[in-house]
Length: 177
Ligand SMILES: C[S@@+](CC[C@H](N)C(=O)[O-])C[C@H]1O[C@@H](n2cnc3c(N)ncnc32)[C@H](O)[C@@H]1O
Image 1 (cartoon, helix red, strand yellow):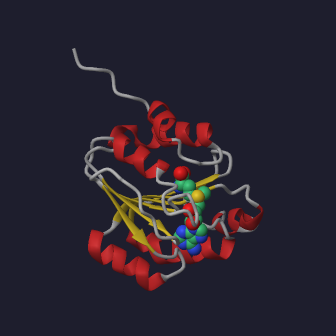
Image 2 (cartoon, protein in one colour):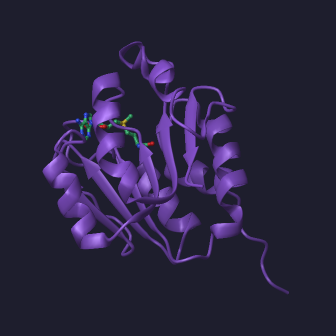
């Protein structure tokens, strides 16, 4: 008999991503992504974790790697990282507001199926990143942690974007139609 598949929550318990609203974000992610789990996707997460510590962070990349075993997970952080990561994860050092860098990433990987912005949570940065990457996004663009002080204004800005939903607390999900 086939082993039951591990839920995203169970996978997250192993890898301990630092997503602030972990439980509710994971429930939403599972709802959005379960049917795509074995697809061959290109997933970009900006904000790897661990800030200036090169050997800290990577929890969410490891979680996505296990949940999406056939996908390529691209992790970006402002700070250099020396992490041991699974073979379907690639790390790139760069800033979320460096549009040239973001374009070069897309030259390398193609369009991203899913983009998750869990980086600086500064409204003006979040907007720059979205403007650079939305046209390079195939399926979902997600912005985490809208509750942060530095994110004041993010919700108001994205409420004006067609298709943006805020049904999950402190999460903005924008789906390509
Ligand atoms: C909240 S942590 C990410 C946590 C990770 N996604 C997880 O769930 O485990 C935020 C990360 O964003 C990075 N960061 C901050 N400003 C950034 C920027 N302008 N561009 C890229 N990364 C940035 C920080 O270095 C930090 O490691």
